Amino acid sequence: MARSVWCLLPLIVNVPVLVTLFARTSSAGLPGVLRYLRGPASPANPERSGVYQSWMRQGMRVFVFDAASLRPVARELFGEKSWWNTYEAWASAPATFPNQTADDPESPGAFFHSALRPALEAHAPRIQFVGSPEDADLVFWNIWDVALCVASGHRPQAWELQKGRLTTSCEAHFEMLTWLQSTPRWHRNHGRDHVLFADNPYSWESYRHFKKWRTPLPPTMPRVRDVMRITRNATLIGIEDRRTRGHRGGSSFVAVPYFANATKYQAPARQDRGHLVGLAASSELHLHSSCEICSELPHSPSEVRARIFNDLNAGCAQGECEVYDLSKVIGEEQRNNISFYASAGVNLDEVVHKVVFCPIPRGDSGCTKRFFGAILAGCIPVVLSDALVLPFASVVDYRGAMLRIPEAQLMSPDFSLIAFLRSQTPQQIATMQGNLEHIAQSITYRARRGVSSSPTPDAMDVLIASLVHLAHHPGASLGVTAAELYRGEIAVEATPVF
Image (cartoon, rainbow, N blue to C red; front, side, top):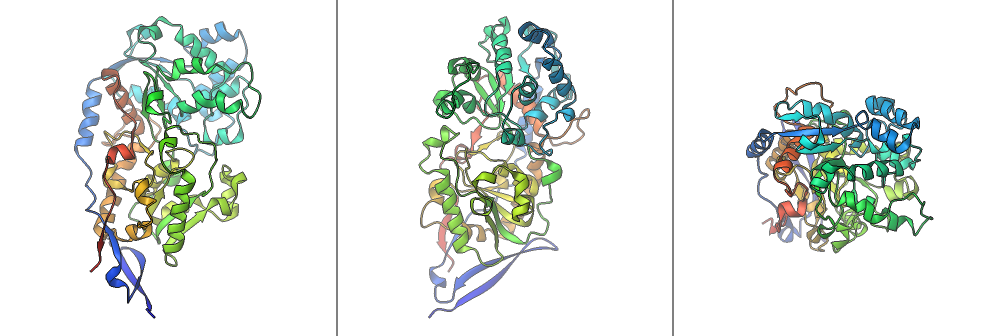
């Protein structure tokens, strides 16, 4: 009978930091062991910063609709209702909004609302404010959707407040957007040069269809075609466009990172990390898909996650992986209740801080906050979602800072995720960790106080540059998925050890 041998493989990532990985082999089966190898990770691409600078040099003129400038419109639409004063107060002092989510929402909508004007002002004189929408290259609709809706009497669900976004907007906001569509400036280009924040346009468009099967529709809910006059014409900013390509109309979409609080997540990539792989995720997801484009993929997210959990549970040596199946640990009812996790013995922050690799599978949609949290925490993302959108991919060099495995390859019975991750050399790991620290700034939201002294742009800087580029190149693609970035590349090639 073959005797199992435990081989201790020390990977010196950054002296004196030592990451120890365990690989299990068999003395009789060594000639047949396969390892999954890949070339060295690419260094950070200096041409990316050149793209950012070239976009910003083009400059643009902007007009911003905000709470103050829309006061006359609000009075015209809603009379002297006091709730608009409440919204104005929250808009001018966001910290006074009573439904904050522990400073770490999923959506950057609240941050975007408060940071937009300072971010534009920081790039003067290339960015010029004008006094009329008629003179602007882009017209910004800077309305904080959640706060406006709550002020007007809308009652969001607890999970919506926790994530910092609404599934769809409310009656008051849609009334104001109807007014916007009546303006001559909107009609000039059918709204294509109007910019508004919408986390997920697909949920705005599909909400009426989804809701009617569960509860009676309120008479104030806008018709789908009225919603589409906005979402299929305007320039939208959000975390993900889940619509299929044929259902986007003439709209443009600028994908931005999920909000991840840098104070909470950020850690040196090359700090001591006691485990090779870490994953805390649910294996069982909602049957209803909130991602139209994901429906085109051959495997459901639950199938993908089951494959990952089976691989890690069967292949990880003792102490090598830190894995939590949240469906079993906390149950479906508490899935969106982050405060419950600690009582169940799950510390999501520690997982990304203590491991070298963080698998990033699909969830209810193609994208996930865990990708951005991993980057800030210095955990190398292993992207296992073909539909994951990579914000600012023209400027941010993701390829040198992450691993990507196509879903079809992951689902192959001949593929081993844990074996692939074990095969990464110390040099490959060190290079990717260095690149993580290089790109982290570009996906981080930071409060702006004057012109930034950092040579590396942050998320709002790159967003402004992307909008400048879009103003001069309408129709430019600014929401590339992992599958599109890597095209037909496979992640690994199997070769014998000996």
